[in-house]
Image 1: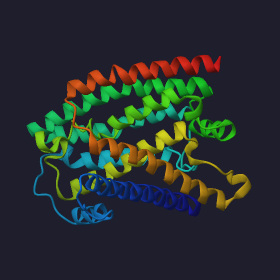
Image 2: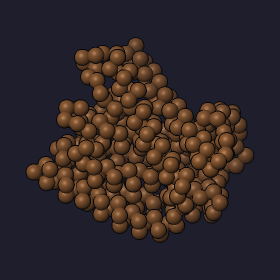
Image 3: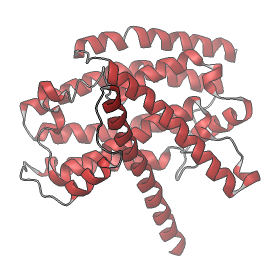
Image 4: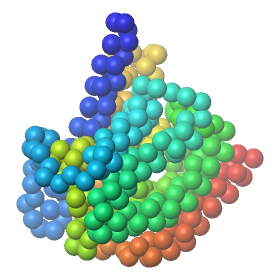
Amino acid sequence: MTVMLENWLVSALYVFLAICVGLLFGGIARKVTARIQNRVGPPVYQNFIDVGKLLTKKSNIRHNWIFDFAPVFALSGVIMILLYLPMGGYRMFASKGDLILLMYIMVIPALGFALGAGASMNPNAGVGVMRALTLMLSYEMPFVIVLLSVMIYYDTASLTTLLGKQFSVGWAIVALPISAVAADMALQGMMMEKPFDIPIAPHEIASGPLVEFGGKYLGMLMLYSAGGIVVETSLFVDLFLGGGVVLDPAVYGFWAYLVNYVVWFALILAVWLIAVFVNAVFPRFRIEQAFKFYWKWPTVIAILGLVQAYFLKG
């Protein structure tokens, strides 16, 4: 029982720290965007204050049990992904073929979000959900091809094995730069940053799926969004930057974990800042423009990366 309790506590701390990192990154994004636009912007810790205030408030809008359950469902999906995803080389749970498993699990948070927005019966929410599903169909094509490239080149679908091979022979971004470019382009849409923030579009559809959520519901969705930032940036770092692992814990013990986490943090911050800079300077696409873009350039680049991985493997 003691061991089980310790595992639960470690898992809770692991997820809590990951979500705190996501909230911090959201604050950094707001500050950086403000400075690019010649504004002062809120402090980087503003998201922590906002979440704390929202979680103590009641929502005056309620529809049905699906609407009530949706934020919990979405947040639970993100927590599940965080437990399976290596961060700094460390993870709570592992399985064989977990790259494929992660692709399935990553649908759960979006599904919960969509169900809650649809249950609100707000037309703006419905438009946002349709846009989000169309966008998902758009960026998943190049991203799946990228995953195939990585799995073919390293002959594994296990993230643990993938990190070990990158630690031994070098980062995948060096061996598969074309696939890394396609993955980063897909990542912009996964995070719904400009020019792919079409589902929320505050000035067009009043934030779309978020329009009916307030109080505790909105607070939980902010936590869901923060966890999503860490999930998506960490996935890129795990696939192409060795997960931030630079020291072997079996040799250096505690110091290896500390250094690896610092490197992991720096790498996901760099990946996030690239998305933030693009978000700050690009206008929003229309949904049909996003669909055509993803099924054209990123998909072509991803296919070229797949060909490169096949011949390098051969």
